[in-house]
Amino acid sequence: MMKKANNSIFLNDLPRILHGEFRLYRMLDLNEADGPWRGIRPDEFEIAIRLACADPSGKDLQDGVFSSMSFPHVYIKKPRSCYYSGDFATRKAFILIYRGSDEQKFYRLGLSPENNGWEIQLTDEIAELIRKLKEASALLHLEGTADRMDMLAEQLFRELLLQSKQPASVDPYELRIRQAASWLTRHYMERVDLDTLFARYGFSRRSFYRHWGNVFRNTPKDFLRNLRLQEAERLLVFNTFSVADIAWQLQFHDVSHFIRLFRKKNGLTPLQFRKKNGSGNI
Image (cartoon, rainbow, N blue to C red; front, side, top):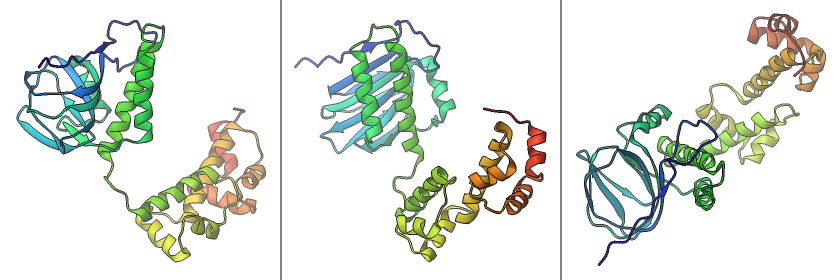
């Protein structure tokens, strides 16, 4: 039987408008990738996103390092490596390929040289980036398309790399605590009722403080206060509001108390801070 052809989309010779660091060389969208493969790989850095396969796992041997991972997963093929894969059922895969000379850029980004692959979750973000890359390839020779594909491919790799550095599962209590902290970070300029916050995320007061202490070193009240004092620093430098106006904007209704807290954090009063750091409009 004739082996199915794997058509590559070449981007290396397409003109770029921007000077991005990660310049995509080739891209493959494979619905029926098959093996085996044995030999020395070309001088290319390959990021294989293996989406699905009838086999329970993908097995690879690269420079003497064996790996076996369930689908979906990412596998990194190094330039000029000695690589072997045995027979496997046809796979669905999406592959990004860069010049071998680009390899060190990925290590500087955070990829470990010892990490040949990791299992992933196909999140909505990853699926959408793959969709956009496929869509862009239909307009390959329009000005700017290659640049957009470079940026989308880099973003896709960053999303994948994040998953390699995150725990496979997060404690549900920790997740809710971090969601509560994120809510505070977005709403710190508003009046915040902590009892309402506890209820919003399904905690009693006591359990919220217990689980919060497992994640953050300061209390929820101190966390909120620090956010407000940080914004006060910005307002003092980049606006001409009075100290009293800034205090009221940030829910400090006792101006003297605000000044004491600010001086404790910064070693300066708000007016001293403004004088030292300059002021002006944004």
